[in-house]
Image 1 (cartoon, helix red, strand yellow):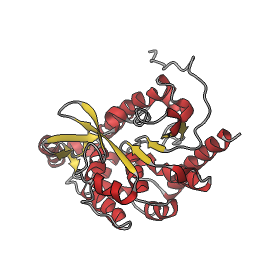
Image 2: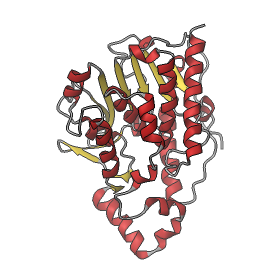
Image 3: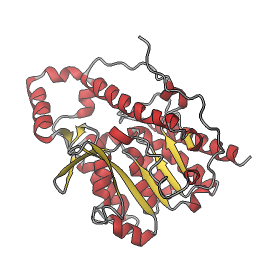
Image 4: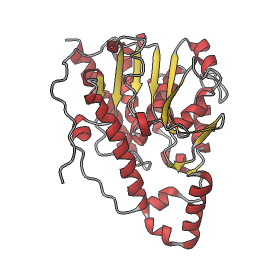
Length: 323
């Protein structure tokens, strides 16, 4: 069967963005650790010094928020290289990592009953409390906490943070920031933006239900274009060009693989917009070396590999743009 290929011909060739005021990070689940390398390159080249605004979706939003509160690459590295990301799947009655390794567990009456109950009643297996506690810990390291609102963050730092969310009640992408949602807690919105459907329970705020912003707008590269020149924004995607345009076949033989394949498909369609919209010139493409969005069981070597890819892709982009 022939699959659709996004057209890339006829797009305007423009110079790289090397003095950005805005940084935008795509979603990509566990692959987001590659952004540590990207940040390292931004700091080494001095590019990050002029940044005033941050945005992202899902895993990209986590990085955007941590940069907005003043985190530096070395501190982020120390905190994230040691963490066992499987812990982000805790606080669920079913051990998801075990379910991923042995999908036949679903054939056990008790396991299948708990999964069905949690999906029907709570609309997700994990409540996300471990991740929320971790993020609050990170915020407290910079003098903020879990109740810090967008307005308070902007007043304290002068940096704008724009969070991409999916509002299920209206079926629309919405943006949380200091102007539109000044009283919304930043930590809560980040928790909402990384709420992978069916894995994490959705987030409710003012009677509306929110899930992973990456489900509808995984790469919000144009989020600042209304008020800023396009050349002021630099974006990062957790995929190589080839992975977006000609993706490799993935296995879909059990529930976990089915969720992963569905999620990757949705994200890839969103990422294709980078080419349709002519945004390739202001995008850093980071090769994830076939690490999947839901591969929470990363080894130290795999983490370092992703960080290296993020660094090399970003450093190459910046240095080429200066010549």
